[in-house]
Image 1 (spheres, rainbow, N blue to C red):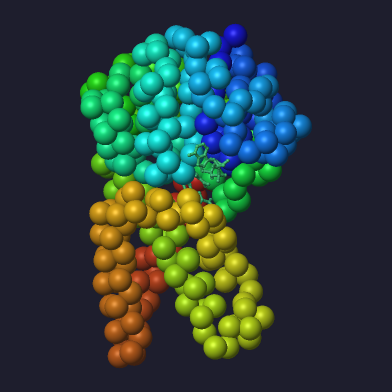
Image 2: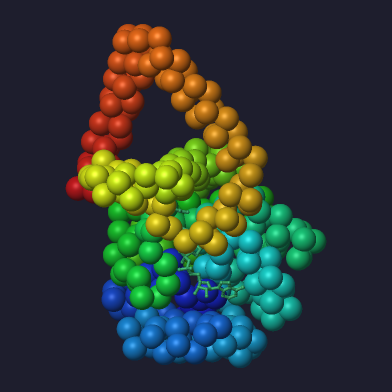
Length: 294
Ligand SMILES: NC(=O)c1ccc[n+]([C@@H]2O[C@H](COP(=O)([O-])OP(=O)(O)OC[C@H]3O[C@@H](n4cnc5c(N)ncnc54)[C@H](O)[C@@H]3O)[C@@H](O)[C@H]2O)c1
Ligand SMILES: O=C(O)C(=O)C[C@]1(C(=O)O)C=C[C@@H](O)C=C1
């Protein structure tokens, strides 16, 4: 039986594990836990077959066809890669789910001095504002994309194994360049989180915040769900993808300034222009998503 070792069994790792187990996939899933209570919960929920507290406890059992998945916060990947380097044979596939790929590439270069052929960088484009093993969802990845960013040094056999595992839980695989990934996700995922956190923080700091939140309804809820996401996880993402995030913030700020000026000067055409273009783009995107899900 092939082995999948998950380091960091939170929302992303446990949803993958539960997805595989629900579909009776041929992996023995072993979780590496720092906390005994999380390990017990994961066993109770049937997320993992076995728990260990250190990769060293299981490393000698691993070989070709086995996968080590790092689903820890983005800036913790380097520490985990140090363990991988000292404990894993080159035949074991190593992959990750971190939200930024350039920083993982840098971490690999710092740890190995080169990109190891067994390392396949990946990112599931699915998630939620919830964290931890208790949020495990076996269908989280169904009809969602997983972006893999193989580099020239990456061995195709390792890429194939990782792609096959994600397909088993219903995901669609997309291959992409590391830097392009970070640019796109900086705009489509990291910027919206900056805006949602900043909006809620702005309103919460207002002297009348009790009244503001009392009268907030659906629009506010729809727009700000992601501001309930884990601050530690997002701290890492912002710093790891600083260049792309700053670029996106600058573009957004300039656009917002233009909209502000249009409102100030009663420029109805400009206001309607922005809203109409945005509605058309969003309706088109929603339609495409619906078709993909059919
Ligand atoms: N939450 C999302 O929507 C989402 C989506 C796609 C990708 N990601 C990425 O996936 C990764 C995991 O996110 P998550 O939402 O599952 O977070 P999570 O907080 O639910 O789980 C992270 C787990 O890693 C453990 N951990 C933290 N540091 C560790 C370390 N140094 N060694 C071992 N374990 C460690 C934590 O105890 C926790 O169990 C992050 O890199 C995140 O950027 C998250
Ligand atoms: O749905 C959410 O709550 C998410 O934030 C998921 C989301 C996203 O921005 O789309 C968040 C981070 C990821 O790396 C991938 C997906």
